[in-house]
Image 1 (cartoon, rainbow, N blue to C red):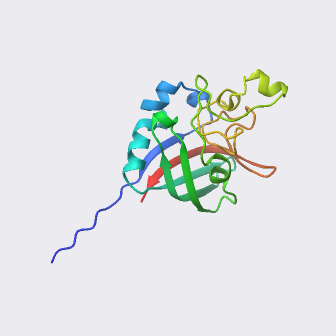
Image 2: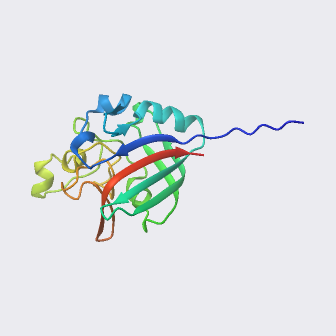
Image 3: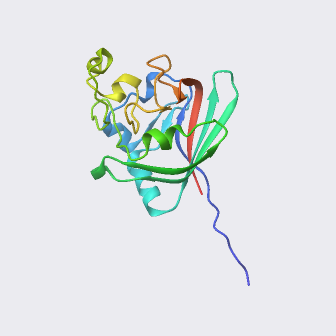
Length: 184
């Protein structure tokens, strides 16, 4: 008897090649996805939700630091709910060599935020918070699942409030580039 095994092909969700302000996009743009000729890319929240709600996927980050070394983080469970829940993120099961679970610890359960649709819980009486109207996407420079502006800032702008980085404790790993993948 012939046994056929389905193969899973990794799906690129995100690629930030330079930490520019490319990911400073509207809710409508993140909903459908976008890219440019240099390789910056976002799959689209609608498709991401459809894929992760219809099957079991892992999430993998490939992160290149400014010193050009590569690190990775992987999550054994990754789900993005639909637009009616503001694309709420559920993530767990961290492993990797980056040293810290920045996404699961600070972003799990968060709703997606863009500069024109603030769903993050950040509130403060600080000057910075008032400057950005308590909107993490405005402060960091790109849309994402922010919880008090979080620690996984792969869509942020380099040099803007530590915007393009992976953060743990008081250590900021500044990024050269990042990729997010759906894997099986």
